[in-house]
Length: 274
Image (cartoon, rainbow, N blue to C red; front, side):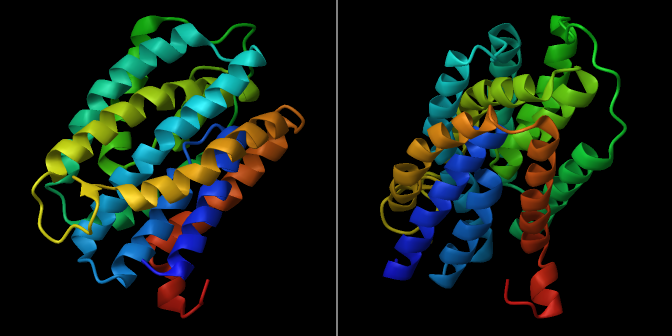
């Protein structure tokens, strides 16, 4: 790993942490593309690089999510009942998803990751918004039903799940935007635990992994990303309560659109060095 890679990971961690606290994201949608570029630049096979990026991102997501959720908790906007119901179910299915990821081609995983991020961004911005009810949906069976696909996709693609959770919470479960951001951060704690465990267990003994890796988690990358992401999650959480819900949604969508196109390879195809 070069000094350029180290600096890039530190900067990426700061950006991911700020986005985590600001938008309720785990930050994997920023960390995964950057890590994939670094790992392939270091000579790792594409299939190994994409899974290593997924697993390491989820490992970083865990302390970042704890940091951001703690700040939101002190603001009184985390709905813990929903977080525990969706989180426990999401943990189980994130582990299942991480296991399935090992058997899918890396190129498909990378492109599908980009498509999911773009579709989620579009749904957030242009999707028809229902009238917000006085109280969000409280039926635990409905919460569980949504947690299953969210957890599964989180594990397969190495994301905390907020790219899916926030649109679901706002549109289907009728959460107010700030409550959706805060509660999704709490749920991510659980999905990150399940997914990370799956990537570690299923990556043990895999050849071509870089030094200091435990399964599909690279410890040097994890440390560098975590050092800056944890503190910036606190800054982002503070900023979230000073910004409007609409501004949050549009900022959320723009960053997701860029990262999704980057993972699909659109900019490479166009010859744009961005």
